[in-house]
Image 1 (cartoon, rainbow, N blue to C red):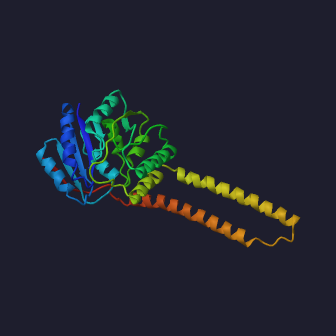
Image 2 (cartoon, rainbow, N blue to C red):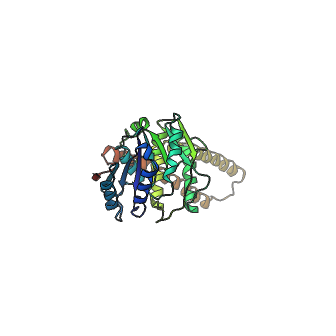
Length: 304
């Protein structure tokens, strides 16, 4: 059995060499193939990855021409793996490589995907809040099983990888691709360590972009939500109209309510603008997909 490890790298020059050495040492019995995907880092991660690839025969370093995002970088790596199982692990060393064995042992029971879950996470409070929000939205929009934590640290069978890489849209969301392809999923508890170097690369802007990819690319429920809200607004307006007519007959001396009219106009206008924004996101992403916007572009591939 051959095991592949995909590691998206962004500004991980201080940790990636140590991580690769630890992976090779811990998983030597599984003959690991390591795919490093440098996602347009602004430090010297590209050179570090290239040096690692020329040093170790089982490491491939792929450099992208710009920063496409973590999920795009992972998709690039998945297109180059050859292992029977593929583990995805971040470059920040918060997930000890030895924990991959736990995921692999569970996957070999016949599961397509095994996610990691944590009894205690070492992220800061804002990152944890973001994770909970992402988890809740995925449950609603992607029909994620309740109780399953969406972690970037997971292992996937090669047969499912072949299904996932068939997606060629410019904005991939790995978990969305998993849920639309299989329900044969499990999870195991693993250790989570504190970050020793740097800080999370997920800025507020990147988190918003990630959530929009999940909302727009892999679910039509936002549109259905606005259909429901439109019906609700219509029924509310109809009820208010009937109420106003009855009140006018009962109290003909009541002056017209300019304040209530202004509030209703602002409320309905805001609702329409939000709906048009969501609709525009759907159309814009479809346009970029039809226009051939790439998931990634490769600058170079280095191996020993």
